Image (spheres, rainbow, N blue to C red):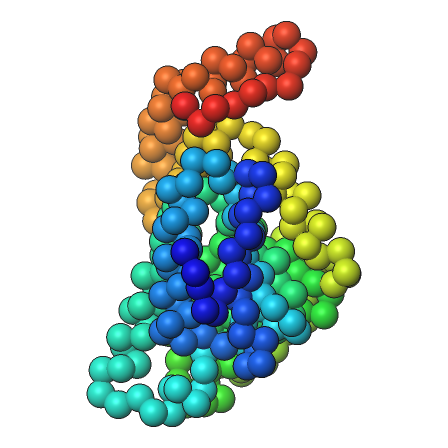
Length: 259
């Protein structure tokens, strides 16, 4: 499919989505969100793709929503855009293919929210994070108040959302918002290195791991453990499980087939 605001590239079993609105720091609009949603759905259904990287063009990952657009909103338009963004980000979070955010610069407002719905966040040292919506008289709209709290805790989430302060990549790593910080020139190499490592694993098992960890946020421990056992049983029924165990015993690299 041809896209106007994003670039989708495939390299072997890894796909890379680049938000391509450099002139406005990759600001999110309904059209950008819709293109991202379409791309993620298509890649989710592509059996050749085992891991997805999301990044931005230029000096921003995503520097929030398009403020000039928000300034025109009336009535229910704000809610409608929030629901559109939430649906896309919920899909990214729940799909069984791992998604890596390669945060190349500003990840502010909707950009921070977009990074948080991904499974792993790798940040360039120059990246900045924040939920500064309060500075504009609004609140986070794409799940920021919820995912940020789950990632960094209630106190830090309140601090960031109430002050509107931006934090550095190193500070984001310190509070658990990102997993790794690297120099900007190494960012995409590191993202692809991690993606290749993930893509080499059994894809069904990787998807089940993602489901299990996501579920841990919403259920008591005893329910989560019971759900884990069911997923474990599901994995045991796959050809990938047979191949993985055989390869280990035979001291060779497994050839997983997503079955």
